[in-house]
Length: 446
Ligand SMILES: C[S@@+](CC[C@H](N)C(=O)[O-])C[C@H]1O[C@@H](n2cnc3c(N)ncnc32)[C@H](O)[C@@H]1O
Ligand code: SF4
Image (cartoon, rainbow, N blue to C red; front, side, top):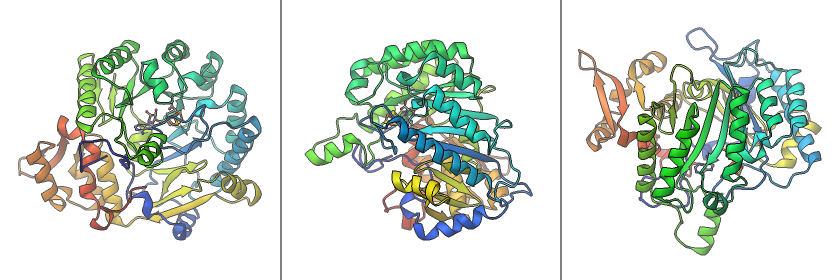
């Protein structure tokens, strides 16, 4: 996200939450402990949907653009210790009163690279997890995969273990670009894995692409889209390359005081526009600022849609982010501390938290749902008692003038739906800070 300049500069970021992560503090940990110690806060007389996120922080290599908490060069003993800690953490979470008999509506194995685990490690992790929690009732179990970590047996195992949505980090089909950006996989590994994935029969398969990898050109981007359409995945997620502070590229750029070798924002947006239009010509529909889907009746994105509508998310694993009863929290990001808190002290590895005000909960849902491409104003009236069209009238009017939104009205001229135009959708992240409370507009995001 960048509003100031057309260049992709170090420090750009992806908005995934509100208030900014930089505002969460260790002092507020008692807030999340208290939230966990009580039954869920009901909404319309019902507990909100709940999901489980499990973070697997291992990767074969650190991609030069990646900003996630990942570890490379780990040995089998370290993985075993991590899997033990994660299983124990889940047992601690399962005992919390906030669970109070609730079922997980969605489960998400994210990373890092969950598919880095071997078949044996995966089976052992799942066995241990199922001693404490079940996800039989979940409508979606997502598992993120890096193509070169897959084998036929592993793909089969994932399906047997109940994964319903497999997300494959393809990113690009050019081997030269993959190598330049520090990816561990090459395109032949995508094609090899694709056959196994197809024959395992997952209900949903997603491909991740990035617009603006170092070395990208128009010609190659068109090839990426052509090849993705040829594979015919159920959905495609297209990120525009961000350069947060903690990536290998960002550090190199700051040290050498040179310009980022990444295409500028207008070019990355044109690439996404081209992708959206090409997918639409092949029967896909746009489902958010980042996603196209092949069959809207089949792909429901439980994780994304529930999270964007205020669901509770119990986050487990090192540095994971979660949200429960209006309180945000993040686990500690240090390896020894994370393992020690769980395995030696038998306590949840909570690192920082933030209790949101009612206004902040409203802003959070509004900006997250805007990424989907539209806001239904009656939803916010019913849930928060807020008229978002008038509360942020000036912002909407500016965006309407700029051609980023269209305001749909009913017979009484009341705005009932706010829709992003294609121009708005392509820069959705850049539109969001205008809704931040003034004190959070100039603070660091992460
Ligand atoms: C956790 S990874 C997916 C699984 C696996 N680790 C992999 O990369 O294949 C999530 C996705 O974030 C995206 N991503 C990572 N760093 C990015 C950046 N700096 N800008 C835009 N997208 C990024 C990539 O598309 C990646 O597939
Ligand atoms: S993009 Fe994926 S594979 Fe690459 S370092 Fe990040 S989490 Fe690991």
